[in-house]
Length: 275
Length: 124
Image (cartoon, rainbow over all chains, first blue to last red; front, side, top):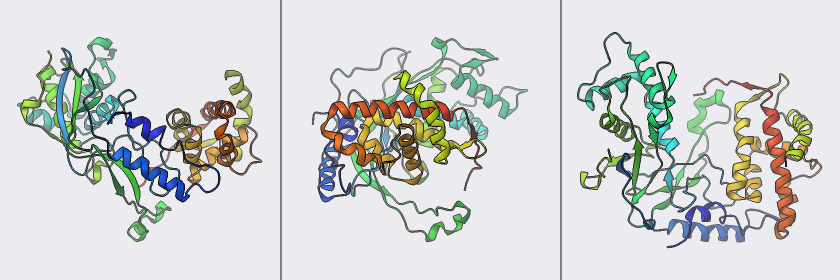
């Protein structure tokens, strides 16, 4: 199909809704139902002119696992019309296809560095025995590494922009069939958090939302540089570590209930590193 | 728009206090910062009427709507959505209202930053 799904989901979704009178009228519900059908029937087409990543960009293709992926749920999308999709999702402005912002990728990777034990184990396993330098405490070293990679500060001095690691947006590289579908989450939390023990007895509140279907492949792209805080962590090692962190932690919202999981695709679909 | 924002600053402060977003001790819950800040991007993304509908849906965002209405002297109206709905066929008038509302939101955001953010304990 041609057309911009992002435009349909945000600008056009509520365009013909009648705001005068009752918002949750049958006519409005029918309009929303038609929009939902169009959105969930969208089949991905590769954007024209899609080329291999440029030199210097490290790329890996990862596939969404069941139940799916949800990024951008914080964007408001609920008016109260019955049957509407209530949560937001990120769409690329130009192509209209869902994507994962580089800021989300960077955030997931940064959050892993708040767990020094995990980073140490990762360096040991993935890095073929890379270990913390002698004389340094694990926690302090992890913070130093985190600041170098994510804040661009080394030994108290800022790193030049062209020497800093870049975390680029992840775009769809392959998808078969429809890429978007609806799902429900049903939180049941007591309004008074001091009575959180009553949560299991509260009526569930079903929230219908749009998710990216399992099986969709995303290309994650990085522009990496060798670390000077840990010289053994060169570009290739960093790339492997970042890939493993994304595979371990997932990305997007609702990762605690299974969304946002990713898995590797057979090596033939990986692009060679550009460096 | 800059002149409008300046004109709205004083009314924005009164609106924040009267709606209860800013409490007696000149503090505010940090969630309100996000709610006010995301109003503008939501208007750009989805349009004015859908955004007003989103913000009319729940109690906390409803306070933000009330603050906007007080800032632009529409607090005599019951509901901003019902005030704007008839303008849907008059694009020029709707555009003017959009600019007025966005200026009010900018004023609210700027004034809110002059108060202290309340740090909440992490809830289970």
